[in-house]
Amino acid sequence: MTKYEELQEFLRSNQSTWLITGVAGFIGYHLSKSLLSTENDITGVDNLNSYYSQKLKRDRLKDIQIRDQFNSFNSVNCNIEDKEKLMNLFKEKKFDYVVNLA
Image 1 (tube, one colour):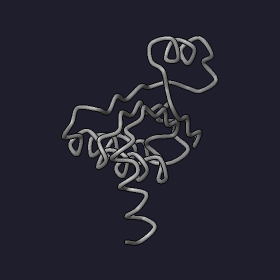
Image 2 (cartoon, one colour):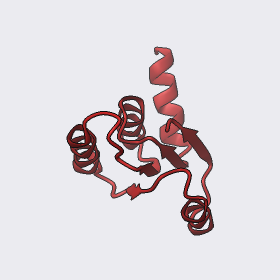
Image 3 (cartoon, helix red, strand yellow):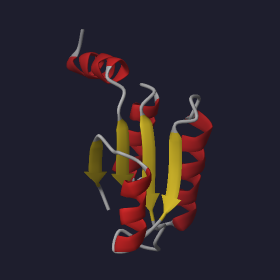
Image 4 (cartoon, one colour):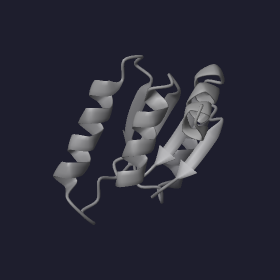
C-alpha cells in the first residue's frame, strides 16, 4: 500500500470536519476533491477575488459540488479578513482541522 493509499484509508476511517480557506484556488480545490472522496465534512471559504479568473474559481466550486456524493461540502463566500463572519462559522460548527490557503 502506498503512503497516499494509507492516508486515504486513514481519512476514511477517521472522518473529520474541515475548514478550508482559498477553496476555489488550485490547492484548495484539489484538497477538497480528495477529502470528499473519503466522506469528510468540508466547509470551503473563498471570496472569489479577481486575483485570477473568477470564472475558473466558480467552475471549480461547481465541480466540487457535483462530486459531493455525500452532501458534505458547504461553500461560503467570505473574505478571511471578515472576522465576524469567520467567528460565526466557528460558532456554527466545530472544525477538527483548519487549512488556510487564502
